[in-house]
Length: 557
Ligand code: TEU
Image 1 (cartoon, rainbow, N blue to C red):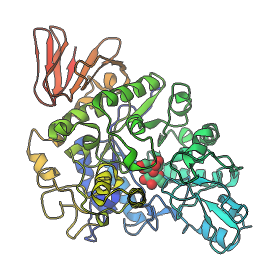
Image 2 (spheres, rainbow, N blue to C red):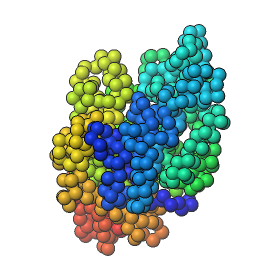
Image 3 (spheres, rainbow, N blue to C red):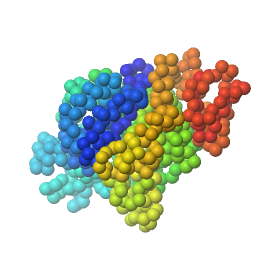
């Protein structure tokens, strides 16, 4: 594998609406991010992915873009963006913008023109089809519920396609002119604005079959089939477009790109990552994929630690030495990682530290989601009005339609809603968690009195200070190479609740152990083995490493 400038870096995701409000409107903004750049630098962050900040009507919280080359006033201005970029540059932090090009917003000027005249050039940027016998062109179901087809406003028998919200019309990637427009826009951000790269949103959705055939209904029982089926049948279509994108943008300018990609296998991983892959990295969603299996949230079952270990280790082996995955435990589409992947006994600081150890020592380019470094857990939502996300609303209706009680429905949403990643970042223990001076757009997390930056910064044993040490260790010139390029070697799990593995180069080996069981675990080590970092009770004695329950260790063998 060729060495690249982004190898060995630690990335951080900001959900801008919920990171820091500087102007007292209850919504996070760019000056708020600027204020916190020194905080991120102190944590050791070198790549910063910011979820969409472009002009948007916010039907899907900014993932519906109405102008790709402007900043939405709720976040600030282009001048603020330039200041943010300059501030990040000062600390050696590269900005990663969110690239949402499977779809735009129905308020984008292209779509407005398409509605005004379906024979115009801009209309050909979208997927517009005639209805069949007064019905929609086919039976695909959108990711946020309902048909992927809606009537093109102002036209009786014309439908436009949207794999997500109806305010997110899909772009037609088969149109070469549209593709060039997108690459031009990307190169403007990459070169003229000087960003470090892109996180590429929902991109496998561009793998479509332009004939839009009828599909065998799936098991949801509404006669429809998930639009994901069309994508998984047409991965090659997407890959072809992405090779072109890569050649004309990222590769050309030596920029970073991390793809939001599901469904990786040994057979196709080299298409995505490594020297000939279309991306620099792709998120490791193996645990999330093992959990999902059904359209309804209430079909999800928790994973055991043993199963979590199995799927995460399998992903590491799939990537092998081909290229880098991007390990994640949570993001803005997920409930909190500690609440989701760990048994209830470890829904606390100990669990957060031990899971952080895994996140930051697997092979790959780790992404930390805002608040993860504090050990933020899921927020308690008491009723549907406390949730904002369009997918949560769809799932609420679905649970109700299937006869679930209000209590059970709220439990399902408390377990799975995307809103968990969208509550304000807890900066201190004040009424609005130091996020804002007024009531924020989402409720603050109930644990903000103890789980917050100000309190944790003062406590040497806090999750925050542990994350700082972890990242410092990854960046230590002595160990940077082994944490970056060292081979991943899985070890056995002695108690059914432990993730243990080696990272190995030709001349040294590091052992990582995270014990999520109820009893200590032991591993044989050498006389000279040294503990580089431990999150709780860990010792090396008589050639045995003992890692207490809820603890993790990084040991140089
Ligand atoms: O997500 C794509 C995606 O696959 C998720 O929407 C997923 O289906 C869902 O979260 C499962 O719970 C990206 C963005 O991350 C998400 O926020 C956007 O809503 C979506 O694309 C559309 O742009």
